[in-house]
Image (cartoon, rainbow, N blue to C red; front, side):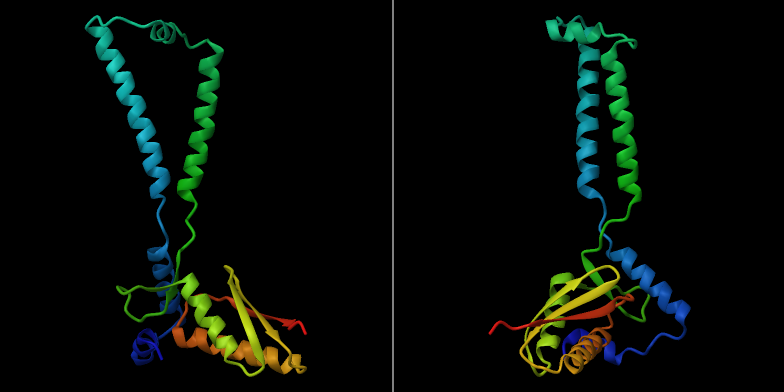
Length: 200
């Protein structure tokens, strides 16, 4: 039994389904990644454009010579097709950025149940996959196991040479479910077990 399992085993269970749902929501929200790369990129682009415009404006005030390209840019009016095209592109890009900011990111960690609302524990998805695959391989007759974690289900594919497929599937499902319950993984994923015959 791992240290996390020891801690969870010693913690009393939460009283009431409402409290459990609140804890689950808080944990998932805390483990959800932010949109830092997109925010940094947009900030750099906007800051660079603003500094360039400011430098040109200050230069023109103090009589700095204008190059041919700069003179052409300063002669563009609002009625030019280039201005309309750039404005349309900026509107579309702004809408995409707003949608990106409002859409929550995919959590990199899987939340683990705790009774303390100020404590959030998470397992990496790869670590949870390895742990569940190990539990599936511990069932007699299973030669190999592979686990995929989806938002609503956990798929376990086992390779076996055994003939009793129904009993083996139930045993693997029970083993994986017990491991999930022992870890205290939050969520309502259904465990789906698929069987593949080993090549002779």
